[in-house]
Image (cartoon, rainbow, N blue to C red; front, side):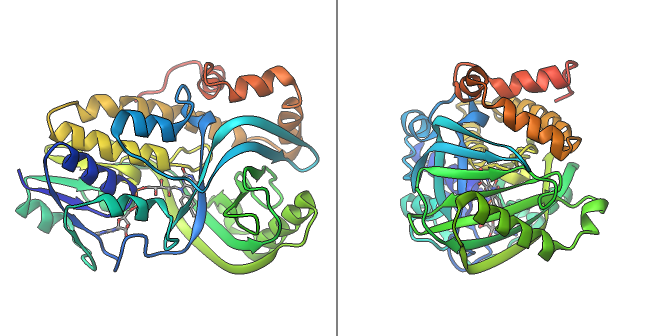
Length: 362
Ligand SMILES: Cc1cc2nc3c(=O)[nH]c(=O)nc-3n(C[C@H](O)[C@H](O)[C@H](O)COP(=O)(O)OP(=O)(O)OC[C@H]3O[C@@H](n4cnc5c(N)ncnc54)[C@H](O)[C@@H]3O)c2cc1C
């Protein structure tokens, strides 16, 4: 077997590590000059979206011998709508760094890799597939998938973010659901440390949103964050990203080509998170190549979760600020708060079922 991995990101690296664990090696091709050669920012993984897995760090460690060190755990989430606020407490997930940061997850994974990583190698599938018996498409870019098979796009998103300086509690994150500045989307603040955090606003690029003044939305987002945190936040760097595709590939595998991470459809349409699933798909693809599991079988639940998450997204998209206020206010109900954070109850699955009782095609 001759295995090529296109992309040294989350899913490409976990795939390489799992192959190595079972005695195989792969050639990894990375278009950038080093692993994580991009902006520094924080990402989060919330347990609420991965029930019944309570603690993904422990899960990866115990099941796959993959030991990641997050920046901090999340013990409190502050949730704001236009006129309401609520807090959720519990073991709510973890924050980790991305990009050039020395502790970014991609750097942690790359340190463990023995297989060769070919840098500055922006390879294309056609060339690679001629030379290798197995190809892992892990470029994080659905456009690459569309050259091989259908990739259904649910929406494209715009991000605007900044590293902000201020005073933060490392274990507390903030989210805002407010159509005034995050139309049909959300904004969130994830601390990197006691003095630095990522503030990001993300919303779908629907025609009605495209007409809005993006800078004005960002200014309102910043103002709202300052009001909620009761402090002035100073911006140390900022970035923006558009056309970030959220969707899913028709097939997880075609012949000996495996689609992993964003190339499979790892991004949850509800909030746009995809890290944990990306890590898993790399592992699953490697396990299939090693003859241990079936990739199609392992990814079935990912497709199902994608549909549940899309149902919730459509629901939230149709919510006015007044309705969002009501949802946030309802979180004051202790029982609902407990249900949301309980690993025993897959609350998002339940909500999706209520909103869309007929199962969607996977
Ligand atoms: C701004 C932003 C914030 C996010 N926040 C969160 C969050 O808080 N929580 C969460 O769970 N998810 C979040 N996500 C999503 C998460 O980052 C992705 O789901 C995850 O990184 C996908 O992993 P991947 O393996 O598919 O791709 P990536 O990790 O992006 O890796 C792809 C790699 O392939 C390389 N590459 C691309 N094309 C080629 C080519 N032709 N040849 C060789 N190499 C190539 C790239 O340089 C890159 O290194 C966020 C995404 C963005 C953009």
